[in-house]
Amino acid sequence: MFRENKGSKVNKLTTLLRVSAAGAIPALLAFSVTAAGVPANDVMEISSTEEAATAAAPVVLTHTGTQYVPVSRVSESLAQVVFYRTTGGADVGVSNVYIDREFQGALRNGEFTVFCVEPGKHIIEAYADDAPNYSGKETPKSIARLNGGKTYFIEANQVPGVGTPIAVTRTQAESKLFGYKGGATINRASAVRACDYIGGSPLGNVLFSFAGKKVSDIEAGGVEIVQNMANHINGLPAGSNVNIVGHADPVGNASFNQKLSVQRAETVKKMLISYGVSPSVLSVSGQGANNPTVDCTGLPNNERNFCNRANRRVDTMIQTGNGY
Image (cartoon, rainbow, N blue to C red; front, side, top):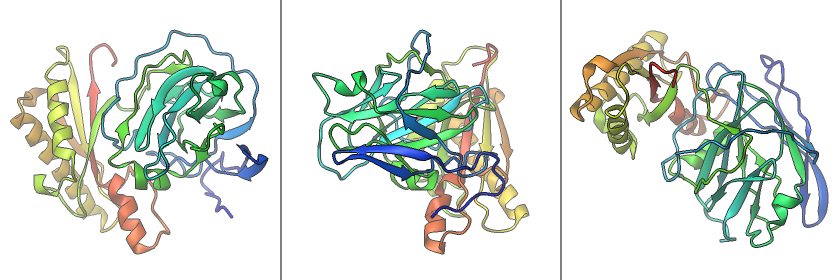
């Protein structure tokens, strides 16, 4: 049923207790992560509910209303979760997201939320249309075990009264997530932490078409993302630096992909400068196909090309003097 990634030391299938209207149905579901440098098929282990003790002031999350871009790798001190609700289903009202029985945000069809928590046990659920009694918050059904440095993709269950999320791979998630918007986030969950991304805080990602390197090759919405990047960079404190890192998918030889990744980064740099960013704060590099967001190996050609969209990208990372 599942293929094991032999490079992963934590690649073990565990039982996710999925609760449905018919009762408790055990199902083997893998929470998959293929962020840069991380083996595929990391597993979020979910079992029956027990208390998860956390205590800290809630952090403010700012992705509300923004378009989804591939998330970067977080430090080993945190685990990252991408939680979304699909389009096309019946309108069942909002899905309230609860982290350790505290409100994190609300999702409608075609919306997502991204957050980080400390590794360990956490209740992570979303209940559709549970107002005004909010019974999902009061009586959660499951608890998750998260590993540091990992990213997990989960889909909200839209069946009323069923809060246990649906586990999906990154490839499955991002085949839907492109074009989704950040959901309403009024975070009150004290377990949520500001994500600490390796290489700096990600400002955004720009995706390119296959073998593309010009502005005209940037995928829909990318130009607006660069404009928003420029506005943000121009408001950064003195001493800030922005690293623009280009990437390519693994199709083609290494030399071509390295050159292409640098050309993509240079394109984004020129765009930022055209929007008023000082060249002195910008640095450019390329990593070829050496740092993929997602592993598309083994997929049929048409599926692999779509999957590789997330790898044909430019990451923009902020580094400030105060360790932002």
